[in-house]
Image 1 (cartoon, helix red, strand yellow):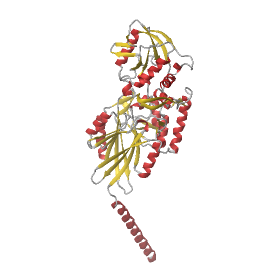
Image 2 (cartoon, rainbow, N blue to C red; image 1 turned 90 degrees about the vertical axis):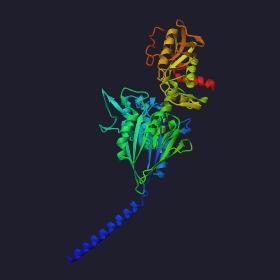
Image 3 (spheres, rainbow, N blue to C red; image 1 turned 90 degrees about the horizontal axis):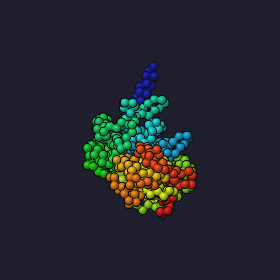
Length: 514
C-alpha cells in the first residue's frame, strides 16, 4: 500500500511538473506576441470574362488564382474578394449548355475553384432572372454580402438566401472575419457592403446605402477591431462614405471599370480594372496595443508573365471551348483581328445610354452598309450593347460578340417621317436607358432632326436599317411591324445575307475599314 502511494505521489509530481512546463511554454509564446498583425486582401471588381482579353494577353482568372496562391504562401492571413458585377454581362453567359442558358454558371464554377472568400452584389447581378440568380447563389461556396438590399416576395421584403439541402440560409448584411497570425495576434475584421440602384428590378428592394452602412457600422463596431467596405457604388458615392466614416480605413469598390485610388482623409477608396486586367493587393496592418491601422496597396497587372494555375485553367478552358464552338457556328475564326481602334471604342453604359458614341456610330454604320434596299439611315437601341467597357487596339471578331451577345438580325424597312420623328423623340426621353438610340445618317435633336443633312419630312417615306429587336416594341412600345407608319419590311432569308446576324454585318464592315 505504501509503495503504491509513493508511486502515486511521484506520478502526480511529474504530472504537475509537466503541466507547469507546458503552461510556461504557452506563456512564453503568448509573451512573444508583438501585438501587430498583417493581413493581405486581393481585390477584383467587374469581372465578366473568365479568360484573357486583348487577345488573351491581359486578365484570365487562372492567372489571378496563381497570384492568390502566392500571396497565401507569403502570408496565410490572406483573403480574396470581388466587389460586384460578375454574373452578367458575359458572352458565354448567353450561350446554351446542358439544355439551358449558362447565365453566370461558368463564373461561379471558376470562382469556387479559385477559393474566393467574399463578394458584394453588383447591379448587373440582377440582369439575369430571379430564378437564375438563386441557382448561382446556391452553387457558390463563397460569402455574399447584402447590406442595403432585400428580396421582394409579394408585398414584403426578405433577406436573400442560399438554399442548402432544402433549407434557406439567409445571406448576411455584414461579416466578421477572424484572423490570427503565427505569434498569436488576433484580428476581427468587419466587412460591410452596398450596391448602386442603377438598373432596378422588381424582385429587389434597395435601401439607402448611406443609411444602411451607418446602421451596419453600429452593429459591427462592438465585435470588430477594424471595419472595411466591399461596395459596388459610383466613385462619388464611395468617396462620400469614406469622408463620412473616417474610422473605415479601406473601401474596395466596383462599378467603374478603370483602376482608381483615392485618399479621402484617413480612408482609402480603391477600384481595379474590369475583367481582372489588374487586381489590387491591400496589406492591412493592425496594432492591438495602439489600435492603429495602416493600409498599403499595390496595383498588380495580370498579364502573360503570370503562369496560369492548372486547376483553375482547366475550368476556364472548358467554358472557353463551349463559347468558341458556338461562335464558330456564325464566324470561321473567332480570334481574327477585324479592326484596329487607335481610339478606344466606347461601349460603356454610362456613355452609350446618354449620347452617341464612336462604338455606336461604327455599329450603326455597319447596319447601314449591310442594307440591300439602299437604306438612308440606321438605328438601334443602345441597350443591345452589353459589354459595358471600351475596346481598343486590335479588335477580334469575338470582341464584337462580347459587345452584342444576344445577336439578332438587321431589317430594311420603309417608314413615314412622322413615325421616325416619334421614334427619335421617344429616344431622347429615354436618355439614360437602353431605349436611347445609336444612329447613322441622322443628326439633330429636340425635334429638329435631319437625315443626310435634310430636315425630316413627316410625309416622306424613309428607308431605314433597323435591328429586329427594336422592331418588336420592347424598348419603344409603338415601334412594331403593325404600326401604320411602317410601309414595308425586308428581312434576311439566307445565312449568306450579312443582315442575318448583326455581328456578321459589323465584322464585315470593320474589315473594310482596317
